[in-house]
Image (cartoon, rainbow, N blue to C red; front, top):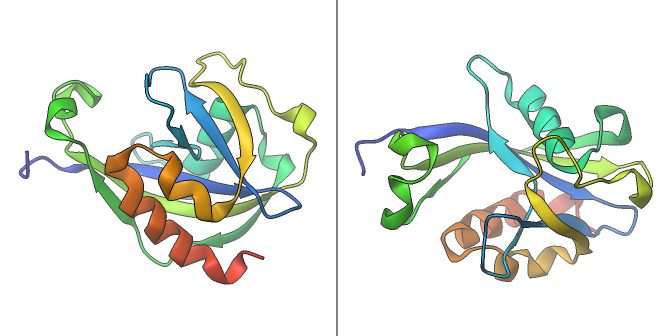
Length: 156
């Protein structure tokens, strides 16, 4: 497991006008876990371009409905639990190495749609930033704490 590389990825902490964070409930997760938009980068893809692509693919929010506030000063890693390593990403990765972006949503809630060509979420809501680590699957909790600490200066 530890000899496998991390999958290059990007994540988005999307804030609304009230400094609440967009979270979605995954279709493929039985647990009541919620997560921020995130996903793997295509080969050669710039992390910012990948973040904007993932945001639109997962939420229907296009790049003209967001302002990029900040990019994290470093990447953040998470490891998959051993039982998931062989099941995700064809067993090629031990987890993800993510570049995170803080973005401000400038559209309306009605612009958000989960009915995308390849849906990933069954529900969505705006959440208090401090609640995020308790909402995510346990193996990503430290990552969410680190992302919150990184973007704390920008949160109201």
